[in-house]
Amino acid sequence: MAVVRPFSALRPPAGRAAQVAAVPYDVVNTEEARALVSGNPWSFLHVSRPEIDLPPDTNIYDDEVYSKAQSNFEQLTKECPLVMEEMPSLYLYRLIMGDHEQIGVVACCSVDDYDENIIRKHERTRRDKEDDRTRHMLALHAQTGPVFLTYRAQANIDAMIAEALAHNPPLYDFVASDDIRHTIWRVPTYDDLVEAFRDVPYLYIADGHHRAASASRARAALKEQGFAFSGSEEYNFFLCVIFPDNQLQILPYNRIVRDLKGLSKEDFLIRVRESFTVMEDAGATPPDRAHWNMFLDGRWYGLTLPPRTSIPEGAVAWLDVSILQEHLLAPILGIKDVRTDKRIDFVGGIRGPQELEKLVNDGKAVVAFSLCPTTVDDLLRVSDAGEIMPPKSTWFEPKLRDGLLIHRI
Image (cartoon, rainbow, N blue to C red):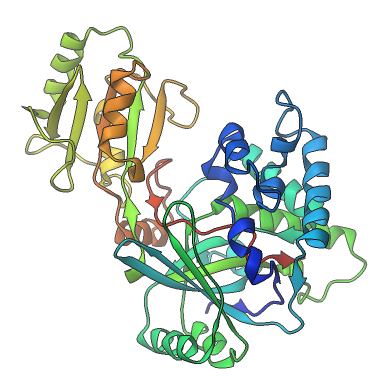
């Protein structure tokens, strides 16, 4: 049984929503964030990536960064200004990217549900990233970017969402600089929708594992600081957007490697042929699952596993990212831990295979791998099995924006 709870959002006025809305903090680095806010004092990146307003050599985990986040948040709240809704509501958030459209329910979900695995995970979090977002939440006493959840679609919830769209005018409706359209509606009459989610057995984190883990840690800290605990305090809930699984779009998460671990290109190809069937002059995009395309020395190669290749049991072992890791990246290139090995990097599928070619041709990598995307069914199956996907297995598009609906804790 999934608990969803309405909340009173702190939000920008409609006329400034497009300026305030910012890409998630973790999809840009400091330099990219600094470029994005140029000429825009209202961008929420001033709050989510406050180091952009500090000297360039500032450590992003320095105490000064969290202090700057707090002061920038207070300034934005006062001068934009941000306005707190008087009454709790649910909200609907629609994303349109080209021909793709998805509509999710914006609500607060239960930290208890997260801790008790009613909200299921598929990714292992890093302590340093948890520390960062926990400190950020505690400095602001707010959750400023939503966790992206999914669930197995239910027709009755679809019908309720359609009904709410028909009877409530949008709060915001704008097209961002990347041509993605963002529309948000307030749903003040929400009891039936809240009750419908009680029949959803599990929610699943699609994106935002660190935000969810940090909400749990922030709750623990605030609970310890308090003098009483009822379970209804706002810090017991965290900001989410919940999309049905049949509306999600996952793009490939491709790989580049900076060297061949001392192998010549010829010897590397010989090693690859020992584990894969290799087709020369392939295209840039794999035709199907269990196919991988490799860009090396100006050419694309198609890779498939020979018949009777042994694959261990388990939901994760059969993922294309896992097979590439276990049969090529680890044994041939010596990349054992993709979280820590600086020789490998990841390229979101939104950039296309041409980005892989450019990185290799420009000398920033020696070899690149183009993959088919992990599917939503893969994600649900792995989460239900209690297994952990390899890092950088999923790239969701389109992305939600931070700063549009803020949850005070």
